[in-house]
Image 1 (cartoon, one colour):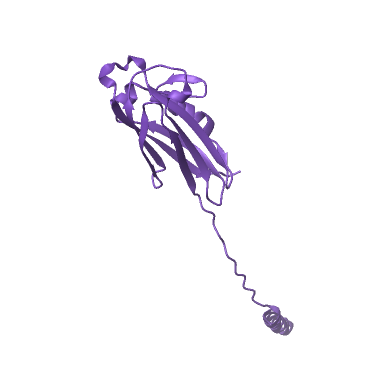
Image 2 (cartoon, rainbow, N blue to C red; image 1 turned 135 degrees about the vertical axis):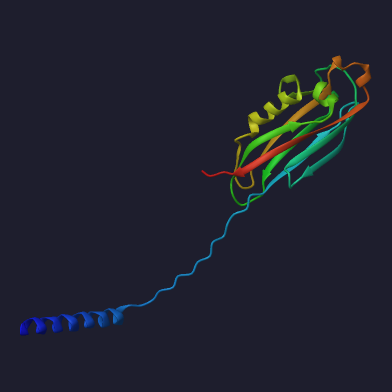
Length: 187
């Protein structure tokens, strides 16, 4: 039993010295760092030209809503395959931020019956597109388009009032909007 007390005392002293030795060799290291996040910023610019008669009279880009609005005046029914005779709109989307961007959605809409029922669009070689058709044609090259920093994409369309609109529709005006949805593109 005497030996047991002696071994217990040695064990307590040994453990106590280990703590002192551990404390003696420990040190503290502080690491500081800075994290900078990128910005998702997309600019939409427009260019447009007036036809022989119809005119784009109002254009507005709402940065908060990513929405472009157009008003077209002096519409009248006609049919021609001459691009020069028709007004046109060209939209350019540019990544002005510091991170890659993807176009995740496009919506083309109008509250004007003349636009929904009689306004027709031409994109590429496809004539006589309705407002819904135009949305699909814009989605094709732009949705899922990946824009690196500084990169841009452009889409151009011509428009006209279809011949079956009738005389009561001539010299009318109409408006439509194109709304974009952008998101961060992760490779």
